[in-house]
Length: 149
Image (cartoon, rainbow, N blue to C red; front, side, top):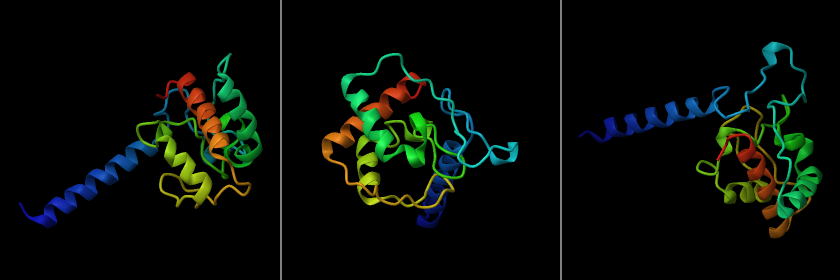
């Protein structure tokens, strides 16, 4: 088979997958608000159900998340319209963005590739491995409570 044809097919598959993952309403209880509905900048982008009980690690992660992440990603990882995406979204399910993706994003920043918010800079206040693990536990428990696993 022609290498050019194989390459074109691979690009088409990747583009289709990217489109699929970016569509509204694909992630459990996390339908996204759009600016065309009059939602103000900074408004939550997803409705997040917070579990009645969090593990001890996730409770500590909630504290670290609030200090280091919520100013952009919003309360309970619901995102903020025009600022940063929700982390409680199908795009961030463990099979697509593993825990190490969160670690690398916090430490190194990340180039925009799923959303149109621009690049994410590294977290200003350096986080320890333990703090990052707790934040990830918190986000993962929120995801599971919202049907994302």
